Length: 110
Length: 116
Image (cartoon, rainbow over the protein chains, first blue to last red):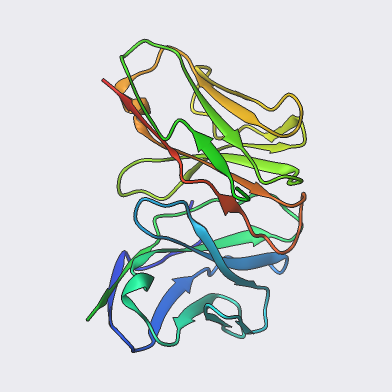
């Protein structure tokens, strides 16, 4: 039983914002939302995580809806190097459990 | 190097053979994870270590798979009587401490196993 649902693929024009959605309608109050990405032939790379507030770092922004049932990862100015599979993961606070789904394959086009 | 190191990067073996895959985590990281990734799929959790002990091995597919971490640092994933279906990239990751809310796992480049 998947905890998150993501579209299998998306395209984005280079220089534009990439908005990657994730549904996690069964999320519990003690579960974080994490995002990782995996560039071809590499291991996954951590991007960002949040509990209920929106978060921003040098890589991306994470917008979590007020009811916490969905979130959006935003890459503000996508580059060709952002082409990757993006994984949205729900993880219990203070847990070491990190399980990946199928993710969204983002293709940034020139 | 400061990252997670996995060896070998590529391994080709014959059906029925025994295989060992090694993971050298980032120094000081107490948590270590093994995942398996088939083509077009997300990483599939296999086992997680906290220190020397396996805290969760619920992802190991059957008793042909076993992993150890005897000194709480380097880990070895062992696969007996390999089958063609075991062909995949085996990923290792480490993190700083158990339950750390940064949640940042650092992954190696993976070991690609091909069973002929």
